[in-house]
Image (cartoon, rainbow, N blue to C red):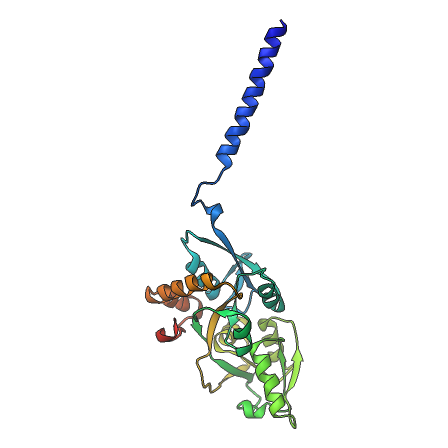
Length: 276
C-alpha cells in the first residue's frame, strides 16, 4: 500500500513538472514575434485640431494618422502615443522618456540644436486673427500696444517675444496661458484680448467648427516655407532614417495627400524636394 502511494506521488510531481515545462515553452517568444519589436513612444499634447485631437477617447488627426502609417506593418517597431502637457513633450524628449513627438511643430534653430527633425509632413502658414469689427489691426505692424494670449515656448510665443525686443518702445502685451488653442480662440471671439497669431489650418478649423463668425483671418508674409515636422530625441538617428524613408514613400504613394484632404480639406503638403 505504501508503494502505491509513493508511485502516485511521483507521477503527480512528474505531471506538474511537465506542465511547468510546457507553460514555459509555450510562453517563449519566437524570433520575429511582435513582442520582440522596439516600442516607440510618441508624445503629444493632443491638440490642435485637425492635426491632433481625441475622438471617442482615442487620439486621431492628420499627424497621428501619418505616424500610424509610418509604422504600419513594420517588423522592427511598434508605436504608442502618450498625451502630456506642452512642456512635458520636450521634457520627455530630453529625458529619453519619449522617442518622438508630434504637435504641429515647426522648425526653430533652438530645437534643431537639441533634437532631430524628421522630414516635413505638412505645410502650414501662420496667419493673424482679429475680430471682424476691429479695423485697428491690419498687419503685424499694428500689434504694438495690443494684447494676445500665448503658450510659453511655442513658435508664436518666441516670435512675439522677439518682436518686443525689437519694439521695446511700444511692445505687444503677452498673456501666457496653458489653455488649448480652441479655448484661446473662443476668448478672442469674446473680446478678452485683441489678436492671435497661429497656423492657418488650425485657425480655419476652429472658426468653422466653433461657429466663430465674428473673427477674420489676415494672411502674413513669410520668407520661408512654414512646415510641420515630427521631432525625435537626440540619439534616435536610426529611427530618424526609418521615419524619413517612410515619409518619402507615403508622399510618393499618395498617402500623405489622401490624409491631408481627409483632415484639412485640401492638399497642404511640403514641396517634394524638401522631403529628404
